[in-house]
Image 1 (cartoon, helix red, strand yellow):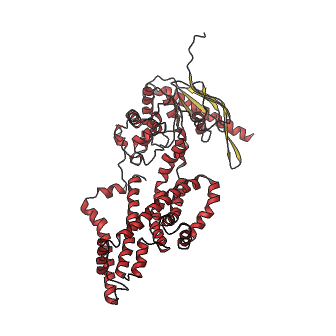
Image 2 (cartoon, rainbow over the protein chains, first blue to last red):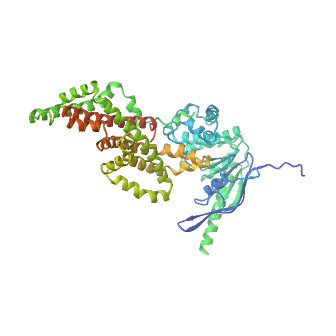
Image 3 (tube, chains in turn blue, yellow):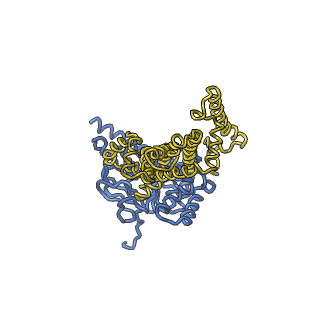
Length: 268
Length: 273
């Protein structure tokens, strides 16, 4: 039994709490939240607006320190922004005065990687993201989808073990979004990162993830998790469609339930 | 497969440079030349109609001739070089001090509270009134003239930098934090480049003011410079066409410096929305 190999947790949050002071009012964003993401796993986090999903990712990445609890990456404590973790924001946040290549190489530049090496590595991830032809384009020449691809490439450039995505495609139109979802899965299979993403879209969550974590209304904690048992590589339509829609229904039911619970609490 | 997602670049600057040369000349050069011609024509007309003597208002041809001879005879040249070096040194000093102060004002509330009143008060005091004091303290040499130039161009550059740094997109700053940028990396690679349009806007005002500062400083004392030459040509030399030629030299210096900043701006800030 002690020979059994347990999969390592790439990211683990142990009873993490975080609150904010907004104009004197105390706002509890996360309340004793537990979460584990195994190595190579893809986990989606869904929940109502303002339930603390973005805070969760910022705490997991080390960008925000938790008030209480611990964040671990591969069993070592995350204190401050962790180089093993890459973060993709809702907006591309490209530096408008740099071309795509220089934007993608930016994290490596900050880390002191010599120019030749960082440009080579940036070109590699650009190729992965399907942006080979846009290395010299400026950010304002890119469409929303291209810009977000560049942001994804930038996050991958330092070869993080874990990729955290904060509603990465929510500003894109539905067609571009589906395409990027599929590309994200392709990237995942080529790079071997672990992924946790926050999303508003239930269909996106079930298509991408191995598990969907459903968060409650503030103070945020995870009420339930829904496994999505579809083999990879996945297709949005076809044989997996039934699995996706069953999982999506389950997520919707949990969200509706927690809403109703909230209403009762408020009524009481 | 990704090509259809790309949106064609449709910034006005690209259409501007893509226009055929003939059209560009028509649009960019002709209006400038026409305005200059009109100015000279009206000037000549005023001289003819008013029949002013040369020591009140010399005609454009007389001034142009004196401008050329002033330069070829080496009358203007040495004075020009003196003023130019004062302006450039003053700009460098005032620019560096202005940018550093601007960053400090933007980053530290305490610094803003403590320094702002003095910076504004110093700016509100006319440089004309300060010049004699600075000449008293630092003499009438290059140091005090440079200092006056620096003082006068400091304010717009400091304010431009402060406004620019304060308006940096906080999301880009957060990006920097998420990429573990050090404080200096954040400043040098995110904040200052972001603020560059405003910093250069301050510099645009600063360069023209630096020329004013140099002339004022030369009036406060000294033996060389375009400001001194104006005094000489009006006084002991009594060469009014030379005085006009000097005025033109000063104006041209200001315009040239201004255009230099614009050129730098075009290079550095070419692709922003």
